[in-house]
Image 1 (cartoon, rainbow, N blue to C red):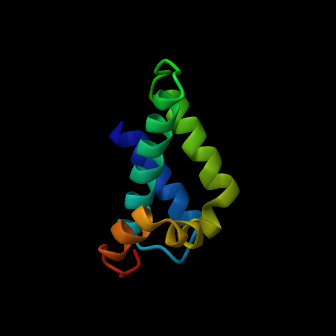
Image 2: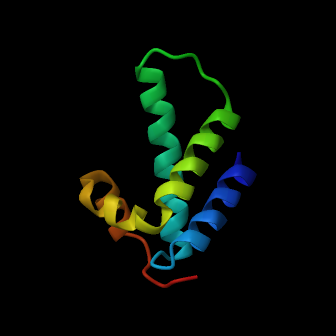
Length: 89
């Protein structure tokens, strides 16, 4: 799973110049966990990391350059991201 998340973090950093590496990693972790939790709460069987990777990758491709703005509006995300270092990669 680490390889998938590292790949997604690298993609997010390519798409969004506003994020530090630490914040990009945190966002990928949050998106990953939120997708899996929401999918499970909806009553779906676990489809594996491939499905989660594909969905999170699609979100990054579609919204990556604006994810820092969207995350700032979500209190849970904003709190976790504000605790991360602001130094860009």
